Length: 199
Image (cartoon, rainbow, N blue to C red; front, side, top):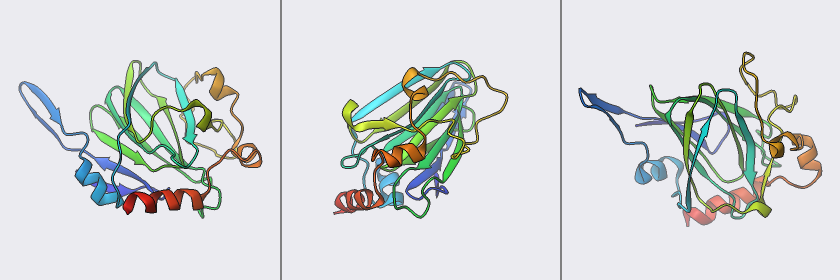
């Protein structure tokens, strides 16, 4: 398993090692010890989510208020998605910066993003499955979004797709509107949360 940090600090891509023979394939897709060593703190697991999406389904950009926030460990066991991490932490030197990774079932990878970061993905194939482990349970009053087609973000969505978004994502504010409305976590809140987990 190889791990490298993405352009958004506190997010990582993990290149996984599949093992196959005539019977099929086995992939160790999550290792708590390896991840904790790479990011410097554990990922407390509170909930596991699984979505299946048709080609063109676009989910996000989602984030949760900090504390506690919601760290995510994202894996695509079937199909193919473009997974995007966005820095929505007010006060971060990389505020508004994004990075993207293709997750698919052929070359298995996973993405980890810390609390306070925004997450989105678009399905590049029908019946794409995304499984993700999260550090806190669903809390509707603390979870928000930024519009994934915000021109200022200029996220790298493929031009050949017809996007399908939920009503909630369609109604989400732009990044600047979310900042003006006080919806975004701050770097200070997130840094304090990361330090608390290291302790």
